[in-house]
Image (cartoon, rainbow, N blue to C red):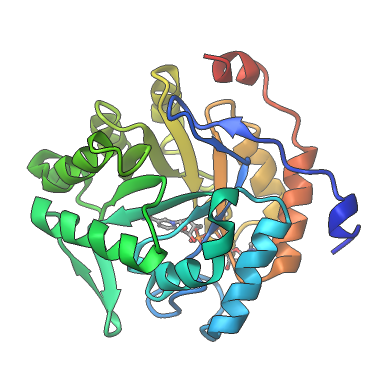
Length: 273
Ligand SMILES: NC(=O)c1ccc[n+]([C@@H]2O[C@H](COP(=O)([O-])OP(=O)(O)OC[C@H]3O[C@@H](n4cnc5c(N)ncnc54)[C@H](OP(=O)(O)O)[C@@H]3O)[C@@H](O)[C@H]2O)c1
């Protein structure tokens, strides 16, 4: 893992669009600490124990990563984050989602306003307090979910009540991202050298002050990490790349790779907005 933690250069913080939140360019995607069924990773893996998950989560913060992304769809993930990181809650920005929940070995979807409210309450209970961000977690029917509007109303109400700082949409299509940017503070989109379908829409969103979080930047582990990190963070529209995993050695290498990426041309001007 290279230099001891205390000697390592720290990841910088940068504003996440207009949210008022500041995040590191690398975030941690907390899927694998909570679920190992129905995943798209190249290799199977055992679900870690509570203790192993806690070690990963503390390792993530010790590496200077200041963004953790979870969801009710990630099985035990929210409960494990709540239990392990209670005492360090001020040290990171936390996002969770509404719409999909993984229970008894399968996903359950509910994009109604009441369902989303219940989901938010459940997440707050498991996390030991409110997250900073709530994203509507699409099942792929992006535009339909957005047009129905129930889950969107619930997350906006949570923001308006002051429960969370920012709300947004984690979808699958550029069309969905384009509809969501009308109200979203943040968009979470897949973006990599293998999938550039959101390239134009993230530029449009960025120009409107919407924060951009990238998921699947490594194509779930199918792309070489250092190249994928350079590709994502080399794009001036991207605020942070959320990378999943269980290996602290990989995460440390990812932090090192992120530290090598020069801020893209125009990024500081755009970020200074
Ligand atoms: N709809 C949604 O909202 C949605 C959908 C998908 C993902 N997400 C979010 O985005 C996060 C990331 O997506 P993802 O987990 O699907 O894919 P990803 O970040 O593209 O890839 C993660 C995979 O890459 C491997 N990896 C990480 N660093 C590596 C390195 N340096 N060398 C070799 N392998 C490396 C990890 O394995 P190791 O365990 O071996 O490190 C893991 O299997 C998720 O955890 C989740 O938070 C959201």
